[in-house]
Length: 108
Length: 108
DNA sequence: TGAATATATGAACAATTGCTCATATAAGCG
DNA sequence: CGCTTATATGAGCAATTGTTCATATATTCA
Image (cartoon, rainbow over all chains, first blue to last red; front, side):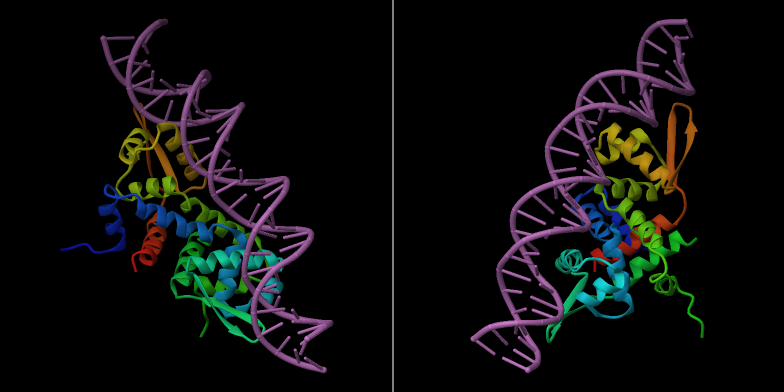
């Protein structure tokens, strides 16, 4: 029986290339900051514009913008414009899944 | 119907406390470094002593030890002694799950 | 068009991080 | 017991990071 789980893909790759781990680490690094994780969690509830996120989480608008830029350039969030506002939302459901995974560990 | 998923727990908590997000970020931070992620992935294959990890991943013994200390104090890995060797292994299956989650995202 | 609002961005700075190098601790073995 | 092997750890350092403050850009609306 062939094993095609993601974990076995890693195990194959472990001896071959190191780039994969860089990417993996890079991904987790995005969740490894309280501000960013809060933003991501907020966006699991609903799309939000920058000022909403900023108020909701009590983080400076500037700090939020800086973090959103990182999240966007990493393709974790996407944007659309609505008048004066830029509405941010999660790019896909992976973010939810990953946060869920982490929460399972924390709230064990 | 009551929603008891981990994600909804977060959504409840989001307005209440901030500590949860610190813990969550702290957890992800552990996976957010290539050396540590490599070590963790290696340990999903089998338990290993320090020098094995060091050779296998081509990371200095000292660097490995430093990282293992972090992983151990965060309860992601545990140890037992076997003669001169200290054998490291994953504390539980959460690590596998979390890595798997991340890999799903990377290898989409 | 000009004022107001929303967002982005650059520079600067403090804090954190992960490594290396040197050395300490600890177990096995002759 | 001394020597060797395995692991841990502290100091120091360079690199990265996240914030703040000031300011730039962009859109709406009177």
